[in-house]
Length: 359
Image (tube, rainbow, N blue to C red):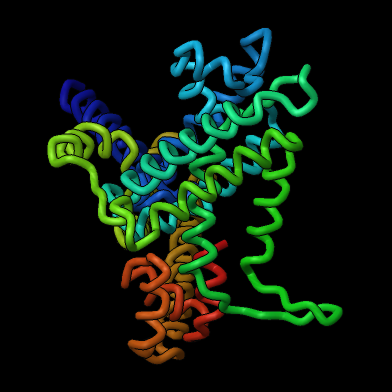
């Protein structure tokens, strides 16, 4: 009995480890892919959850800021308004664009990406202060306000989106040329006009701040974070928002698929052993248990073998992607393994592969 109890305890512990190993990839295989984009991930969740928390728990939502925030030295109010939106609609548009622009962090690296976004935001705030001082109110009564939310962050990255993201697919509709970038511009225009003139001024200042950071004659383009700050972020902040690579997740899924037949075989052996003991104690009707279990396990193994053969056939049907196609996807900010996998999945069609990666 003691040996049986130890065996059952070891089996339960082993089963717990297996369940934990099975649940870990589920958490990693989320719909959102923030691989090599920890800063975008932090702002995505911080802005979204912070906006929802402020709307549900605060009596008055974020209403932006006017010239009194700069004149009165209440810079904390200005900084807080750079993260949280004033409504759910603006929040959905904003976090969607933040997620879309995570590709620039992959391409530039987190350090250079943060340098660009921080400098562009600082320049945008300077332009906002100049505008508010020059035009404190349009009609003399209502003060001019800036819209709350990461408008400076988002619209400064629209400069990169306009300058460095190519149009891969073009379609003619009623004489007008559309591409996959058109939908992003549409989302940006919806966010730009979400709060009327307040959001328009905030977005324009953000776009100008990003434009100034790309001018060759200005020192902003070559600026980078200080070494100690980069080391602190790499050691302490990046692990909090890190995401496993697609290759690691694919390897984990392949390993689980390889272990599945062995787990089914062990389960079948356990059920057959229980069935044989029942035969000795309860009669002939329990003899159906091992036969049905073995048939079920054999059926599952055949299904898995067919899936593996189909996968190998699909991989063999498409040749190795040409190097120029892989390079074109890598120029968009994707890793080499991710680009090769996307090209193989879409028959070396670079347009479909890029559309799947950018969607």
